[in-house]
Image: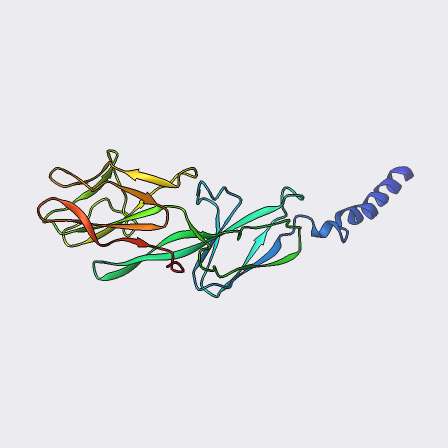
Length: 245
């Protein structure tokens, strides 16, 4: 009986010691604070741990206004040798459009060369990372873009390879008479140019666009005319790099 009492007393003395974390253990699984400072004149989206060449925007971790700062809580890197990679995407204004009585700004993504931020995150630590202002010629665009001005008398769709394209400015597939729609030409990671020879406008029938070679970061401008023809709009091609020529 005396032995049992001694064992119980020992158990209650040892339990608080095992329950209290040591100085090192208290930092385990504690999130780190990562401060992103946007030193640019653009709004910036920060993505984490994805392949930017395939542009899979499913890991957006924060958006930072121009000249702003954002703090994120991030747990320690799974790989303490390679660490984690964060990809800043600069939001470049494509256009502003009037939808009803409201003006909507249309933005597209670009990435500055060599701006990816890779570092090892350790529990309980703080990190400060800067997003730099791009210089001339440093912005890399993911896709190309189309502008279509409907001067006809009925709604039209823009068809590529049998499928209607989705508008960037309002997520519709239709352009009403007197309105302009903006569309994306998706590039694969391996393509530098795309031959656009299957682009059509669809209203009461299918009407061919002029064939052209598309490049990333360029806006190609067209008019669907009242005689059901599609022609180039002047200026027909616009370089979207705000720092370009």
